[in-house]
Image (cartoon, rainbow, N blue to C red; front, side, top):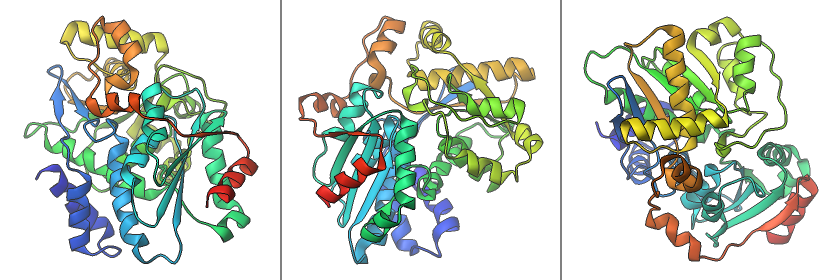
Length: 387
């Protein structure tokens, strides 16, 4: 099967009692009209390139699928749906692109002011139409907190039909489970179950991999590859979950200090830490190690990666040494195009990064956004003024 066909088969298994089969088929073929290559970098390690969608990030899978599902759901809605979502980088652009022009739906994206890359910001501030951006004075965790507070606020719930496009919405995680199956299908026949290394911030991608594993996908080990915001690897080692203010790193989309999907993960394992550790290994990778990995992989293999992929690549190498496993195939999820982090990548490789036209064209567009404090009152005032 090609990717849309495989996505359709899996979504039918999960959603056919909610959405007609013919509609699901149309959604899958429309949402996933781009390639999903698995590229072998070394004899043991392949990279699943998830950045060939319209916004050059893995978030396109979830956002496009969810936008089309919501378009179907909202077709007879009595009032407009407001998608309220937080972004640490790529979610915002993917959601903006996926929902642009969708009838009966407005989108409000909250991002931490000054803490996303220039290209990531432009992807969500230059859309216009039904897409609006809020630059929050704070961190991604503040943005995520505001979204959750809005959903719990009775005044807002009574006045607006709110919906999320973050991974706190299961509609984002279901389509993210599809590409794990597709990656496995691209391995050579009779290959042992793979080790999959996942760049991890809010842990939606990791949770999606657990859904795939529960559906029967053979996976030997999952690696939660974190930057210096290592609350989940710390939990795996100590059994103590200690959320804290996020730190700024090179892999900015992973700068999350209180990941919302932690609750889902421990629920899947019924809070059994031993069972969790059997399936998932966590590693913390520093900025210095991230930069060095970008440089070394280009020098040794001629392959250019973004900082998030570098975190996952090095974590996989460390797991192989720790587990003394150099036989099982390794799959690294590459979640964003290197051009989104051109300054760092060019510095580490000494090679100019080609910026795709769909990103380059954003430089000439006018940005529209509103700066707000990290308070629900400011968000409420914005909604009241605009809807």
